[in-house]
Image (cartoon, rainbow, N blue to C red):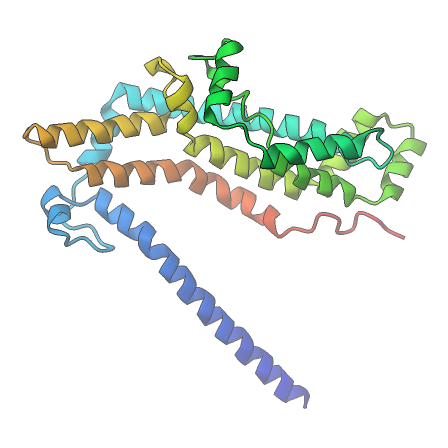
Length: 288
């Protein structure tokens, strides 16, 4: 009987493994196609003969991007902006979620309700723009950081992470004479590292891919992010084609190359963060 159950379990695992491999392959097809288009020639793209493998290998889209000083500057600036914005986002999220996770916080339920309301009663683009303008943040880097410094949704996730910590741990910290700040930094944060890392990835991806706030609030080219610069490249290629100018590129080249370039930082960061998605938050935290 045990042997039969073991065989059924192995068959079940094999079937699911094959299923997930197929799903992964299907999910990889669009990514491979984008990479193929970014390295393909103009004639091959125009003829529609590119599938998941480059046709008429051409690296001009990447050469044009990386040889342009504005792109290199925008890429470095975007990396710094992403890191700085993510740090501020996490700081605001932690400092808001930690006190709201306390059961004895006076008015905590009301404050949490107000945060939740902001998720459903979004003012819209025009009121946001007027706020940014009135605070004199237009055409400054702070316009890309301050309006999105705190996500109510992510704050609620972090708050639930802090609530998942057993009260016995907080009681032990108080007995040892820890202040609230030391309890947060030395006790609570190490126990919610998986949640912190996951939210950090969400914030970083959102900032790296963000372009709408750059369109609304930024006028100086020195403050353009890499996404904005790539958008301008695509428009320049379209104009060249419309005016009949000779070019070995089409808009699809730049679009595909921009997607590949945009994915690179996240592809580099994700392997280091991925382990936190499944790591237990409270495993071994309480021994009784």
